[in-house]
Image 1 (cartoon, rainbow, N blue to C red):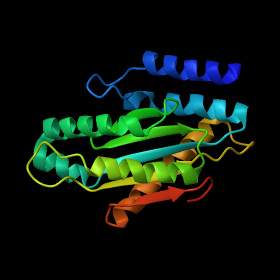
Image 2: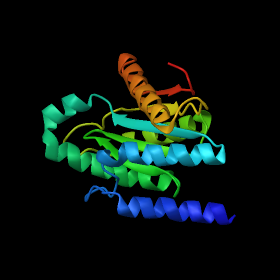
Image 3: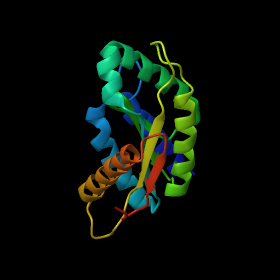
Image 4: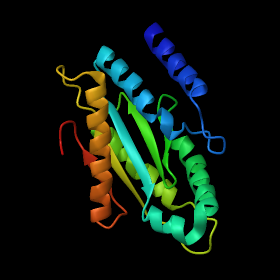
Length: 187
């Protein structure tokens, strides 16, 4: 129990020390890899799973071109606030791109992360954008870390990031408005 309490405190301290986006309170993209590396090391020590969920507004580049950076920034801030109640205290949220958020989900297998990603997409799609028109559809990619003993932490993080990106590409190729899950080692 003491390990769990210390682990929660360490995550909280990490969030406070990491550079956060002023408007959303989310960690900045520059801290993404460091957070993943720390979580991978912790998961290996505990023998638990680690999963990443990337949640994006579909057609983000087009939304940026059509509505401008300020409007899209305001919308992603609203989305981030709407999603905060859906994630656990131990989860870390990162502003991944102008139109995407990353959620680092320790102690979460791919199936649990998939269910959470579906919930996050539903919540995000209900947030009205600051521009006239309907809300954007939302997609997510879920990837579970492959905790292979022959891999070092950096290799695990690299593979995890690559698989999460491949998942986003699959959502785009399917037209968006979907959740794609890649289990550990699946490409």
